[in-house]
Length: 246
Image 1 (cartoon, one colour):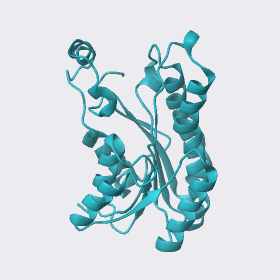
Image 2: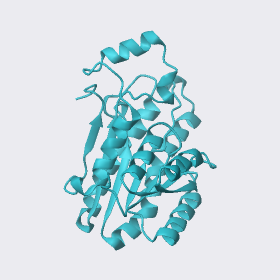
Image 3: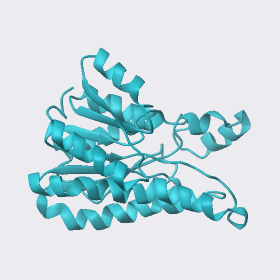
């Protein structure tokens, strides 16, 4: 596979779960991958890519810190002279019923899941506009489309990414930049590992395909949107949820 050959992809939250799968898939499809995470948490993923003959760099980034984001983007441009793909994947949860939710639980989720996407996108936008090409892909969630009790902060942040995507897509389409969202459903990650068997069965029963998805399912959707095969797709939400929300 080489659909992304010659392209530079900057991916946030690249160290585990969906972000790790996206990072590995982009590298396997030929992209030079800048794997961004806190501290050096993405190092094992980068080592895996290098061992397979791919090209990747560790990027220590705090997505809620504009200076950290700006420095990462400047370093990438100095070294590789372009950023062709941005994947806004970094995200956290702080689940709580709204009446008990503390302001810092709301603020932390919105800062990481939504404001960080604004910060990272704004940082890469000028070079993308200059090169008249780019792919911006944000990872939303089925919860941002359907809602979920105890996740008002998370649902708001993920729904916000959809609105952000649609508005930006209209702003930059004339410069050859596409902006899309991938919206996963129930995916087998660290966030779902702690579910009890009964809860897992109940959730699987709400999914027409009858099972949870894999991180690789989301990664495949991201790489499609990042490729030339999706050059006429912008402002869209690509749901990867087994039919859980239609």
